[in-house]
Length: 436
Image 1 (tube, one colour):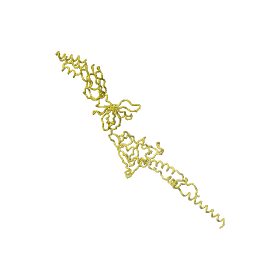
Image 2 (tube, helix red, strand yellow):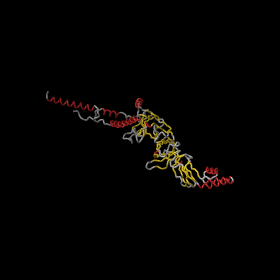
Image 3 (cartoon, rainbow, N blue to C red):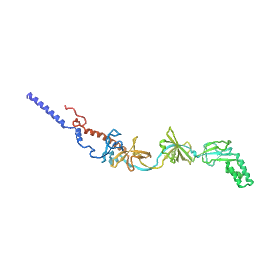
Image 4 (cartoon, helix red, strand yellow):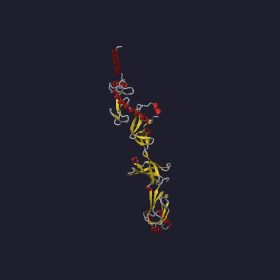
């Protein structure tokens, strides 16, 4: 073959190969480019559907009247449509609910008794203290009680007092009776002895014996202990001298330091149940008598006095009592405590909506009643809340909202990609190099 013919055939082959390469590159589109073209011509997902409002799925309860960026999270607001699609609810099939152990309970109203615990120290009930005095000058001949803190009973002898100043008035009464004066004069003489604080029993004995009585016995006016002993045998006493101070033990005070946050819940007359700190099996009944108008600046506590029944005499000053203070009963809106998800800054419950889906809802918490907790706002009576498995639903809701926020911008970017953009492979990498 001639060299000229060989050169012509080579040129024709190169031209044919180059044309085929250009034709294939212009006619073959990558899957991403095809999707971009199809997306540009296809209607938007929400086109023709009525939008009720926009919201941030991560912050339930907040609604917005137009699209935009969430003020709470770095993500766009999500529309909620009238047909229910796009809402924050998570659909869970009954079979999955059973396998996950999801349990639903209703928000209810219940009569609850709020209470809180405090520790109180036992003290004498100062209102039951009784002072034993003598109203005449004399001498203490004998003491029946010789040491402080001895227990005494009502009517028990405490001391014998010799009062010589009582001899003269009694002798006058005895002389008048012997002289046969009228009853009105004798009655006046008895009144004079009574005014001198001479006991009626002593006057009666003087009249029966016919001789004046100068010794009398002081008795305990109540049950209790001798909190103060002010005399000894043989000492002289003057009118108004306090010989004994008896502290009653029928009731005692339990003085407790109540935290300032709980002080607003104190009401005079509140019932309290007390148990010994050392032996919880020994319980007592009582009530709040008063809250002292003083708050400690160091501990931020308020001191309260509780009157505790001590008819059996088992409580003595210095013992520690664990007090359970109960507030008046009231009807409260409650749910099980396990149904509330506490995040630190807010509280959330998972509510089953009318479409059967589950959605998070922020609530305001009130008083904690142990197994139940009070709800102040966010739900109503009869609302169905998840009491078990709510963390799985909450995680699913957060995951779905996160995926929606990621796919929405990606779809918009793909739809706006120009037709002349470089083709991409199945793995997402651009193919810009020429074949070799």
